[in-house]
Image 1: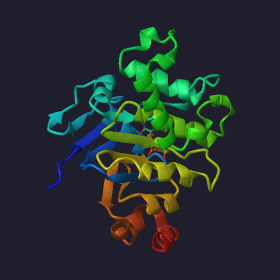
Image 2 (image 1 turned 135 degrees about the vertical axis):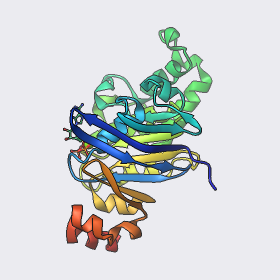
Image 3 (image 1 turned 180 degrees about the horizontal axis):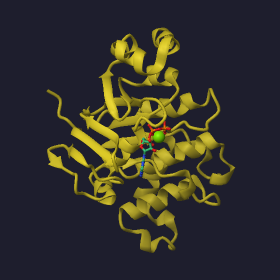
Image 4 (image 1 turned 120 degrees about the vertical axis):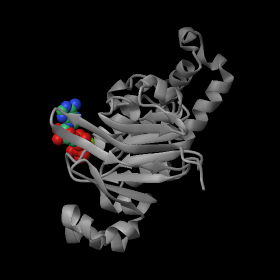
Amino acid sequence: MTATLLNTTDLGINFGAFAAVSEVNLRLIPGQRQALIGPNGAGKTSLINLLTGVYKPTFGSIYLGEENINQLSFDARVRKGLVRTFQLNTLCLGMTPLDTVLMALAERENKGHVWWKPTYQFDALYAEAEQLLQQVGLGDVMQHKVGELAYGKQRLLEIALALALKPKVLLLDEPAAGIPEGESDEIFHVIEQLPQTMSVVFIEHDMDLVFHFAQRIAVLVAGKIIVDGTADEIVDHPLVREAYLGADFCAKGKAA
Ligand SMILES: Nc1ncnc2c1ncn2[C@@H]1O[C@H](COP(=O)(O)OP(=O)(O)OP(=O)(O)O)[C@@H](O)[C@H]1O
Ligand SMILES: [Mg+2]
């Protein structure tokens, strides 16, 4: 059996009497492209917050490999390879993508304190930054100002920054939100092409994108995963039809 990268056992969180997430058993293997879908307020972001350590669970456990990581901080989890994208507002609009990624790499290597020195001394980091930017399709704009990039390209830069931290599991909360229709494919193509050693969990509302790019789809309703399976397995599932998406969703899934 393939080694499990991340798994949860009966994971849940209550806010007061309200169960935002409950009884979640999720298993990720290397290379998995796992979508997390569900109506607004279903608990998708809360689940990501539990996995990354922003929230501490009320119930259950999270294992990274064999290790129970319930008590680890957000930063400690990042160091172990559980990484979510940076928020856009942390980008410095006056910098270039190249310098932005170089700074993240220098921080990772604890060389941030010599950042004032010419960065290009750091040949290995420079090469890595260039490679990361090419990987996310920003090779041709890496010397432009971040503020001049289209919004979709700024979101690709967020992904490059997350990749700079060498994730084993990458968590993306609506990576294509706010991007004009037609351009979000680019983001998901980048996600699809990430190394097979990594697993990726993404939240996405656009069902065409989900059916096209996810290998597995977990459907969260009122905090619980009601079905977790391949597109074929969920598209006709009576619980999914009944609880969430309706005929339109099923038609889309079949066309995908
Ligand atoms: N820190 C918190 N304190 C209290 N309630 C919270 C907190 N975080 C989330 N919730 C509640 O938990 C429920 C799930 O919220 P969550 O943001 O996880 O949903 P979601 O599935 O990501 O929704 P959306 O698709 O709108 O992003 C909501 O009712 C929300 O109000
Ligand atoms: Mg959310």
